[in-house]
Length: 127
Image (cartoon, rainbow, N blue to C red; front, side):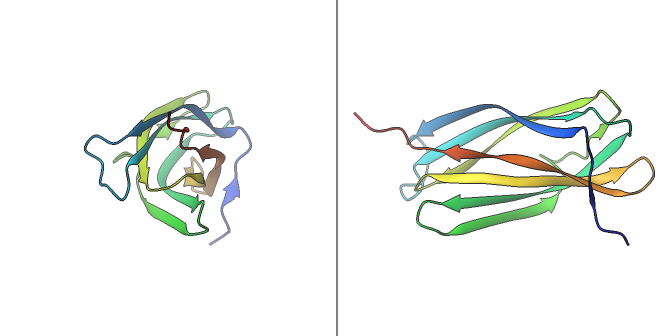
């Protein structure tokens, strides 16, 4: 099987990042970062996204890698010009940086992926 191809025209955009503190969050992870993403298919191929890989690099140097099938329980198929938007979250006890990729198949059965651009999860200073 050939290596996955980074498909030109397939891209991920961070639409919004929202910070929440406290509430029902665990005391050791009181910071929630809610991210809103859109995956756009500006390529000439139809793509079915099958899974994802996230890498969270925490301020203390630890890394959390999350891999799995589907994207928020779905396997979206994006025709040329199509898009898929969703939101999810990460809870933490410290600031960090997130990046990763989504992977799937194009309409010819070739494995493809698209990178998730890195974004900072910063904890605002408290008053």
